[in-house]
Image (cartoon, rainbow over the protein chains, first blue to last red):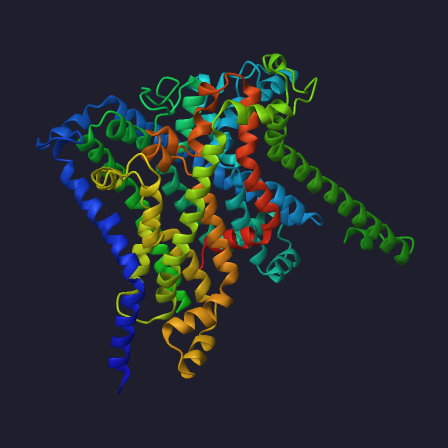
Length: 308
Length: 296
């Protein structure tokens, strides 16, 4: 009989505890999202706000660099994310097969993912630089003449993919935990039934770790849609440009090949101060990431129902 | 199978042969898997080794494609301090990372507590909104938020990055909630029966039990701030006095040394604290990362 009032009281107390976040939600999520939609109909350069209807949207449709940047971001989603997930899965699978030194190798494979992104990217621009970098030098020892990596529009994104695979340790750790959670007796039973390694992987491992795999793939896509830092730094260091005030730099070196959508948004909004137009790009980015966030939320709802 | 059909000389001999066979296969398997792991390990650690080798090369040798340093110039690290304001960058980064982490913990723990322990209408919706915020690309809402800080005349400082952490960080809330859910309800119920207020329950019961989760969140947040490039680039890069290590390092080669050796020395200096902390707090990290994996 007291259940309903109690619950209501608990709701009030919860509201109290949630209040800092609710304010944050309003100020840093709800308001800016609505404001982004609003500003997208205006010509805004930080000083003057002029309504210009759909002009920003029309400009977007014929903005070549916007489409180039969307293409590059799509390339990363299609190539980099699967490369990361498959590589992490392979490495984790290998670690489970080790009879000794598991902790040692796990640490070794995890370590690069901790390296600050800036430092890792600068390091890779050095490692892959064609003149004095060790990678092409080692390739040359094997008789292969290495590409120009961050100086060649066809090789800059593969270079970034290598960097991403190097830093895949956290995904690997998650997969490793999932793989070790697969009940051992299932494998034993399958082995008795004469199932080989591949068949065991397909029929037991894969179905069991599928939720974890899906989760990593979807979050991987969402994070790749935001891909900014590595591409920005690689292009800057390779082109020899700084962030010092007053320097003008169009990102994407070489030949726009590393220009991602968030970078183009940053450039138009905060370097060229075409803020109304940047809001259009922001909405495109929002739409793309929302699609994948909804997939993720569905997954979570599934988990919650299992948990409760 | 076939061995038994062909009628072996003696059962014992057959068993021994099979055992030997099995042992050889196990040894070969051991060698194959460990060789593969070792090769991968070299590939993972190689980049860091080459960074170190280049960091100590002389200026002249940096211009060649030789991989092993002729002389070990440890003074290069000192050069980095002499040639660039790296100490200023370090100070700014520390301020950002320490206050950011502190603010995040203070603001996110209560929210995670409410999401994990209270039953109220809209609880699931609130959690889904936390995930949505966590997944929102920061660039989507960047323009209006930048305008807020510009109006407050705080661009050019790191405050636009630090202050919002007082209002909860979605990723930290998510992670803490996952951790708090693993604490059995009986403990908090017992505290409730003993007449503890929500606040006392949080301080006396939840916090001590959630220490590993809090440690993981604190470390993640610290390193998030330490590594953050986008935020400082957006708000602080226009003011040289507010540069952080990440912004400074990204411009290091163009600004302070065209040579790779000093750039690599600076790169190592930025990496070093993270790697040192990792070796002391490895368990916290690995457990924390596993927590981010999945599970409702």
